Length: 318
Image (cartoon, rainbow, N blue to C red; front, side):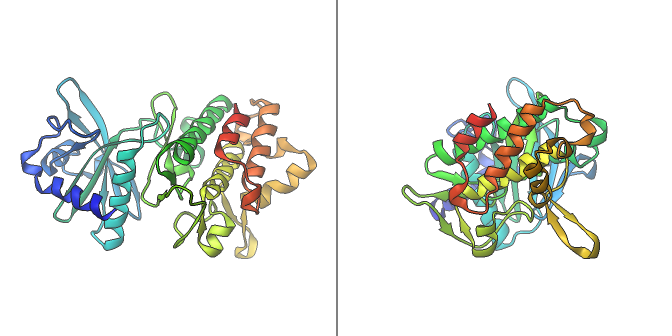
């Protein structure tokens, strides 16, 4: 990581000498600050399409030799050591991965106090916006699209866990990190918390990162992270896709109930119709629903050794 980071800043020091349209030695481009300021209309609020603890994401346009591209630019809010590390991790990992269900790196800028990551723009936004945001009303996801998104997300995780070298644990699988392209193809995004797993290592112990409601219990309590933590998070995502419910809900008295606790009694009774998103108004495949929910329950088993691999999950979903 340290060697990579030094190299990254070697590149950034040469920003004024490198044009993004001329840099072809790498699978990503090194942008100038001027290019990205112009592309996003000086990071205008009208161009803002997302915001989080890391900072903001802006829509923009940039030219290549052949076409005008729509891009998304993530701008870090503050240059803390933590933000610096997450930027370095994301750029390194995105520079490594190449898969149709992973949001790849288009380029970056690192100079002064600015850290900017450039991706392809996803016109259908995130799964979160379709399940719980404005698009939940304007553009309800039908059942076939939900299954397509579930399979695509799972295939992205198969690549990270079994095909990338070294293997990668995402650590923050959730609805807002599943982006959707123009064909509603799922793209797993946001690798700022990801971990590279050396050959032969089955798990690591680390500081807990991620989002409440999606965290595997062994990770949330003891910081023990492995590929099965992503499997658990994916199981939560499957329940969320099937039911349209959020991973955590507040009950009377401030008590929180997670989606697994909510679904378990219905699964035991075989009452899958009570689990499905009522907004679908009965337009779903009941055998598929039962299969998807059953897979989700296996993924969210409290014992990580009982959880399936993502290879198995993809096989069952298909």
